[in-house]
Amino acid sequence: MQLHADQERKLSKNEMLYCSERRRPYVGHLLAVASMLIECGRPEEEVIAALLHDAVEDQGGRAMAEKIASLFGQDVRDLVLECSDADDTPKPPWLERKQKYLAHLEEASTGALYVSLADKIHNGRSLLHDIERYGEEVWSRFHATKEQTLWYYDEFSKVIRRRLPDEVLVREVTQIVKELHRISSLK
Image (cartoon, rainbow, N blue to C red; front, side):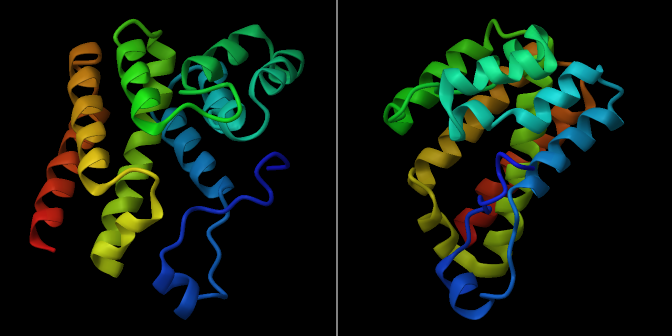
């Protein structure tokens, strides 16, 4: 909570104009991801990594990774690093990071796959909700275009289906991806 205290989930221009009193603290995302892993009965190290999965990317790179190791151990640090698409500042370009991350997932640990899966499910749920509520403007929040974002969800879904074929959450992310395409084609 301390690391992400000043960080909020991305808001659309409409939300900022009409709902300025409504905040979406970033920690809500981290808690949702961790909660999914708890419900799946995943190990404590994965749940802790879920809470910290964006810390290296957004809050200090390699130095943060070493702080995580000192506080929570090497296993948690290693999981967080596996779930990070960048540990340097400035971050490489979006497409380069995502392509590298998708290739990395082909050999990532099972724990990292679960953390990443829960992260994509929560992000996908939020994206669907926001598209339904605010329309196409939602896409302007992101560094990537709508087409790039949909491509990334498609490719992630393919990798995760190959790597965790029997996991119930994989069906959920697959449905989210289908719904993102459906709702995006309507707008």
